[in-house]
Amino acid sequence: MFEKRKVGTALGAALATGALVAVSFAGPAYAGGNKGGHGGGPGWNNGHGNGKTASEVLVKAVTADGITRHLQALQDIADANGGNRAAGLPGHVASADYMEAKLKKAGYITSRQPFSYDKSIVDTAVLNQTAPTAVSYQYEVDFLEASNASEGDVSGVVQAVDINLTGDRASTSGCEATDFAGFTAGNIALVQRGSCDFRVKADNALAAGAVGVIIFNQGNASETEDRSALFSGTLGDTIFSLPVATTTFALGETLAAAGTEVRLAFDAHVETINTFNLLADTPKGDPNEIVVVGGHLDSVREGPGINDNGSGTASILETALQISKKHLTPTNKIRFAFWSGEEDGLVGSNYYVSQLTEAQIAQHALNLNFDMVGSPNAVRFVYDGNGDAFGTAGPEGSAEIEANFEEFFASQGLASEPTAFDGRSDYFGFIEAGIPAGGLFSGAEDIKSVEQAAIFGGTAGVAYDECYHSACDDITNIDPVVLEQMADAIANSTATFAETKTKHHGGKGHGKGHWRTDRFDHKGPNGKR
Image (cartoon, rainbow, N blue to C red):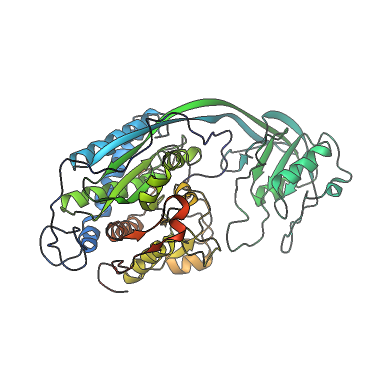
């Protein structure tokens, strides 16, 4: 999953073979007809005439065991390619080769959509305490570089600026120039998150003579995000002239002690990444109702990315293979999408959407996004399509997608919880274009609450995935029970929306259209609502 902390990524990717067009393909066809009972919809059959719906057939067929075989293959690929499957590197290419071979054999029409972008590669990232004792802190664990900070190597005394370490920890630290009254030029400013933009805090520190800035998390309670853990921050759209780090509340509290001195250093270089999205279309289905079922295939460079996002893409692959194996024919065209460049800023999915004409956008019925669905300390998160939990709704149709997941989990006796459309995964380009979207997520670096542990099990006070963006995100970093539950929901939603017809206008007119709900089925496989 993309963490909004990358530096120097050019989202306007250069090269492509051309705009994608939705067409009907000749080639191996799935069995036709409608022998499969009342719930499948015209053309969406199981080929056996046993009265089961496509959802029932697919949910039973897609299993954690089948998905785990793909995850082991991805692990083997990472092991053979420097320990990762990152975009532009051999591990990603080998991962796509594996997926594409399976999909082609199953009768899908596959294509690769090439694109390029510039990526800032961090060569040096140092935050070390040098006095009163020497302590080295770890990049991406203890601290991050703020987006659009400058490179540099500075040392100095840490000087806290109007921070609040007690009570509700409410803070306006660094938001006013007067906060820096008495600040010693040449020191490194320590400011607390809260109340104003990070750039405002940094600009005030620069004006006061700081040589570097450390912004630590606020440490207060929040219903929508973890305000204690490591967080990413941006300094706006232009480069700031000092090195700036973000860090945890706990580390900020440590650095605030009198007499603390640190070294803060960042250095990076820019590489051009040449990569591609892998797309696989069903040979049949209405090309004016394209259901994009996607997830990112690339990992971070730090590890094999088996949960992030092998779990999502392996689940998507197994769903596609079982559709073929069970001879299911969709009413709508399904496009299975394996995005690249997500970890560098959602580049591949954004590029895909950017290449669509207004007419082609109108042909896209919806996007289902699956990014991290096997977290060891999981919550069954569903994207908040109707906006009732976080105040920001997706385009029209997103509420129905959310309801499908919620009602499926409820039909299985499983709780779920909404999560915000916060722009951290590959649905972002779709909702920006007015295409309805939704999906599932089992949690990343944020901390599980006591309330969540009581509902979902697991351990309170621990990250949903302690191996997020790390070398330990390997084949052992998957909860198979959670993976099975999430995969069942993936299979059910794919089956449901393969038969859901929408009405929409071109371009961003999706949000002004109306969904036909006469064939929309919110039921789970056991028929319960």
